Image (cartoon, rainbow, N blue to C red; front, side, top):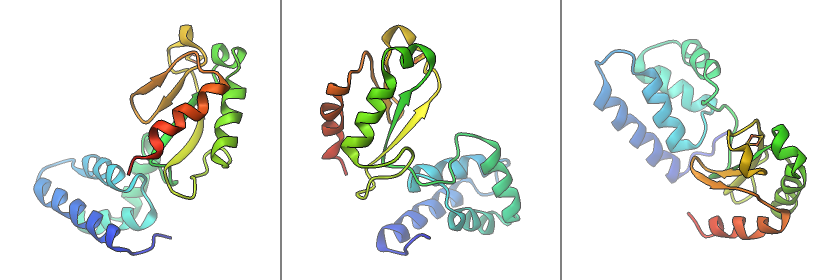
Length: 163
Ligand code: FES
């Protein structure tokens, strides 16, 4: 699945250095997985196996933890995850059209990653800001309210140049 390229070698090195720092402490698995997800963007099987080996625990234990917590992802995601709220308040204000525009502009299906790896689009439940409907969240903290389909190209453009 993962091509072994220089970039990945570097990421593994960084992960190993992090594991070294924590070694000997208790309950570090979640921290290590967080770090791994931060580095790789998701947790492919290879990375899970690597963590298991490094921590001397069975892969099945790692897999169990990864699938238990929904903040861990076993599917690739774009560098910039675009989350479109499809909760009721946003939906009635046209979130479906906003979603459609994002998918068209980026030429992807929902949850699929763009070829350059920069974006993936995900429909999510209420983001708790219904008065700003329809709302879109890019990454963890870039929040856009009252989004119209025409705003979509401008939002995408902001992140195009990154990385
Ligand atoms: S329904 Fe979209 S923020 Fe609540």
